[in-house]
Length: 187
Image (cartoon, rainbow, N blue to C red; front, side, top):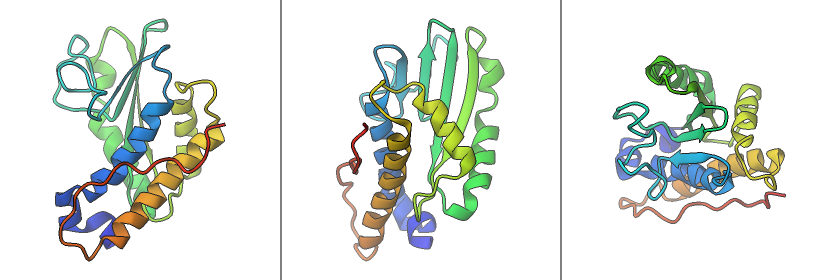
């Protein structure tokens, strides 16, 4: 657990960010960007101002990982990913819920939902509550992306990137590798 979640050099070098962003990169490729306006906290997927929430909705320094705007229904769905140790799933969820709750009232032009979700770092475990949260995120995906494959790939990317982090544990230097790709087809 220390090497995968708590190691200060791992945090400072961006090892944990690599795992987190590998999952976000996969989600970004699954989203239906023709139907929804999607912003993800990854290079090339942010707003023109560099955030994930358009500044005409609210000015903030916070960047939820995934912000999906449905102009038809006037809704904003914010998803925040955390990849904690399996024993900290609930605690991580509560922290993120509290951290982003103010957007429910700060944004008045749309109906807002804030949905933190967690994937275990050691085994890629997705508990029952997070399966439901991922099902909600999946509603914004392209039609050819099957929900079970979506979940399986997110779990596998967490596990595979943690395995990579573990294998590099004795390397003092870290140069961020390419994102881990999904091992399963989306169909």
